[in-house]
Length: 285
View 1 (cartoon, rainbow, N blue to C red):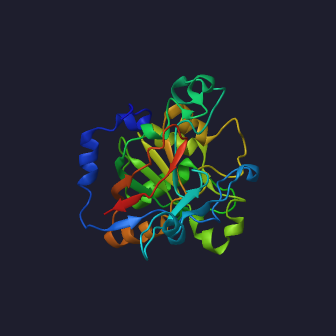
View 2 (tube, one colour):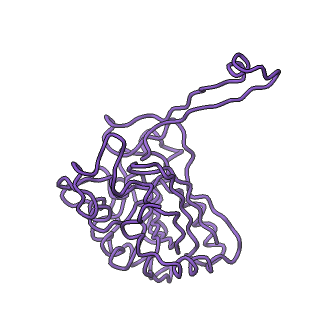
View 3 (spheres, rainbow, N blue to C red):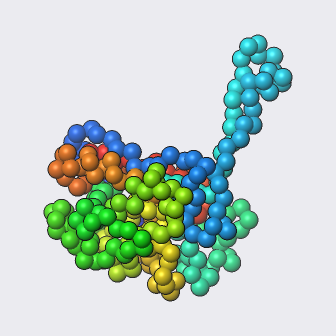
């Protein structure tokens, strides 16, 4: 495998073993949302590309080419932006002043075939201690473009009685994902999210991965492009972002078992040179 870069490079076998020891009940919780044509990536709609599926082979087509009797294969192709639906942002997702994480110049490491540095294929299978901070339960569901502040995070940490540790995956629930079914057409118009100060608090605590139940991590629309969480975490800290998580089922399960830590498993696709990957994260209790 290509050398791992960013915050995940600090994860050691001892961290993985500690995360595995959190599994006590054998309960697996899917944190993803289904990929369907109605899901669009956050941001300017001019750059949105609807997901699409097409048949490239049908049984009739197969039978016309191969003498296979009454049988034939279905083959389909599927495409769209890797930043829509539940996905992991790679470290080449954001360019600031012509550079990505570790100071690599876009002009030197981006090609027509993808990125030669920090492509999503450099991200290893992720197995970490996960901690859910249920800001929506402690501070109330966040609406509009509300910001998750350090005070919100500290309140969740204290109320839930959790401790953040080095190389944790921190997942923050705002309650936003509940609107995906009830108000999908307006889901991306405004979104709550973690603010820059809150992101720095978690990063300073040793966070190796950040995830949220929103499509854009930070409040949307972005208020100040000179102070963004994406730049702070991706470009400056090398911390990958998980977006479009469905954290509501996890909250229910964690409440049943009276704990807020779990094994988090995230397996990004090894798409050479890509800026992100669709993923299906699971929490194991």
